[in-house]
Amino acid sequence: AAQEGFDAEEIAGALDEAGHGPLPRLAVVGRPNVGKSTLVNRIIGRREAVVQDKPGVTRDRVTYEAEWAGRRFKVVDTGGWEQDVLGLDASVAAQAEYAIEASDAVVFVVDATVGATDTDEAVVKLLRRSGKPVVLCANKVDGQSGEADAAALWSLGLGEPHPISALHGRGTGDMLDAVLEALPDAPAQTFGAAGAGGPRRIALIGRPNVGKSSLLNKVANEERVVVNELAGTTRDPVDELIELGGVTWKFIDTAGIRRRVHLQEGADYYASLRTAAAVEKAEVAVILIDSSESISVQDQRIITMAVDAGRAIVLAMNKWDTLDEERRYYLEREIETELGQIAWAPRVNVSARTGRHMEKLVPAIETALAGWETRVPTGRLNAFLGEIVASHPHPIRGGKQPRILFGTQAGTKPPRFVLFASGFLEAGYRRFVERRLREEFGFEGTPIHISVRVRE
Ligand code: GDP
Ligand code: GDP
Image 1 (tube, protein in one colour):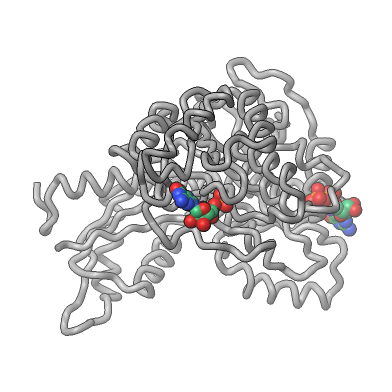
Image 2 (cartoon, helix red, strand yellow):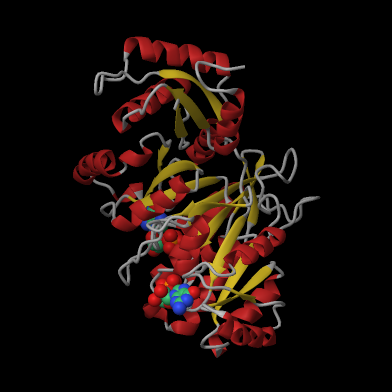
């Protein structure tokens, strides 16, 4: 039935779009300059999305949403990281390794005008060992004459090379059809896919030296019951099952956390790849910050990664034992000004060294997961929206006053809302609505998405 000017189909479509479950993930890998960014832009259909980064600047965004032939998926972006620091082969290998970890299928891009290089061959080995489906793209085939170059790439042993021109779009449609065939319907690490009682997945993330491995050791040593094998769950060797407070949790990528010898060159690059992969696999991210140091741009990037990925978030201020009165005073101010984007995250002030407040970690994680899974019944939501509209109407613009007509929660993990409105809602008003939603319904520890549909 029509609801204040929106027809049923329109409403259903909006809910469908906003409420999707976890999407399968596609990674695009290959050497520098083969055309990965160009291809990613073409797949996601937005020219401006993948910007050319300055060398040495780590990119914040990790995944983008895309759609082809009515199917939605995520594109995991592996380009733009500090390629120069490591040397070509090492950085491309690291990128491929990350892509394999964080995705369900891989597009491997080769420059057909150059042909397969040794670096390409090395990546092929990694890809083949992974068992992930791979779609081989022979890029820069701008015209008929390049087809022969593409055919030469059969030699890589990855099956049929798809001749494409990422730049002009030639062949990309057929290639994307192949991608859809390769992609599963949902990511391998589907939330709750392990069935009822499957362990929740936690990623401990943060800059090098914030104390991730110390924290893991502390929680594991104090309450450790190592669960070796859990019936019915596939176990990734880099993940670890740890029982805390009577509940088994899966800590993601503990191998990476425990690697004590940090590489000198390119350490940030590896750290950033690992963080991105761990975030992709986790449900809740525990973000560690070193309280003894200023909150840095790198801390912010890590936070952005977790927020963008839509994960439940707990903030752990570590090394609390190092604080004196003065530092503590300034730190509180810094947290207020610098960590505003996750002001909603539960915070624990811990020390992995002394064990201070370790017991508060699990309750904080549980709180964040509860917020992440919260569903607001439509009736309650609309009663609340009605109150907002009455008490705080949108400012009048150009003689008109846009109004929220009704809304509904389209999904959880994290909570996603769709608001239907009679006109464009300004950013300030949207923020106000989000703030009030949080005051009313909690959502502690979770990002929330709000999309607005405007009646034409
Ligand atoms: P990346 O380093 O792998 O991300 O590569 P880019 O996407 O930045 O592309 C490297 C260069 O190759 C740029 O100058 C692109 O314009 C160019 N390029 C990318 N795709 C094509 C293509 O299909 N045909 C041609 N002729 N050039 C391309
Ligand atoms: P990671 O790189 O994030 O895994 O950090 P580590 O766990 O290797 O810790 C880096 C350094 O910080 C080590 O020297 C730890 O002993 C030290 N550290 C970790 N947690 C604490 C803490 O709570 N207090 C203090 N004072 N030092 C800590």
